[in-house]
View (tube, rainbow, N blue to C red):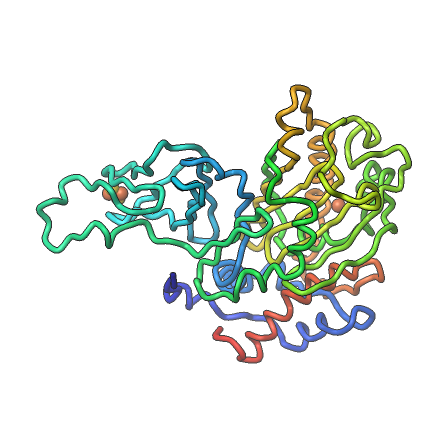
Length: 399
Ligand code: FES
Ligand SMILES: [Fe+2]
């Protein structure tokens, strides 16, 4: 489907200087970081919302959340609300969360389960799981009212490696091109088959790019995450590159007795490992950022997914979920606490430091910093953003 964004055009200008953005796009050794306005300016934020989040593929979670008939998630992005629901034949459907009668939100809960219908709380129009309108009280005598024209408005959706991706514009490039060669890593870790074993939500007083940048480096790990650095040295690992809108790298479990990233030295859990991984994978953690809002962290026995929901230049909601082999979750003694508590602590350490950086970049007189040689993936992520800024500033796309 194609959705008119005409009412958002007034917010579409990008008040950045092309020379500043060009400095971010130089090779790392010569590059400057993104201009400070990119982290604090409302108009930059509005441009990003329209062009990067509502104008391309975004990740709304994992397929296991809607694998059952009638199970749904509701996610908000900018002015839009999207519902993804498990259909009658096992496949998920995605819709705008807008009743076709007088426009009320149909789904109010962030997640849940219905039997066979989504019913609007206002005047009880009800919709089948495929979005078709099946009941509309007091509409039978209304002229030229064709129920089949008033189903929930579908949203373009793709599920790749178990990640639920939606494109609200309906015009983004093919999802396979967006995910590119990241799919090989997702498939190797069987992300499509894993199931959720835990979840946490956070409200972070920082720009979404600051959170993604922080995810993409471990230079801060010795100071900010001493527990993490004890398991996995910040200088271990390598960059990983490939086709697609993502960046990432590996790190090594350098603590000899650690079996994974977890509390109590990474050897508290005795879960099933992810099937089919190599001996090398067993000592490796992979960290990927799928542009713009998904962070995927792969461990020998679980995968962690952060999805970012920007709410303003200085505020981002984050959902973090942990996924395991089904047989691990179904085992009587399944206990994900070591992994969840480890990363919950790490997450909170990250949010604290991201919030400090957010305060700093908003300071009058701050100018863009420089990248260290440990921040190659940060530079790659920023280049994905700066490349899009540049297209707009050079008039190659509508602004
Ligand atoms: S707005 Fe939904 S039934 Fe009236
Ligand atoms: Fe961190």
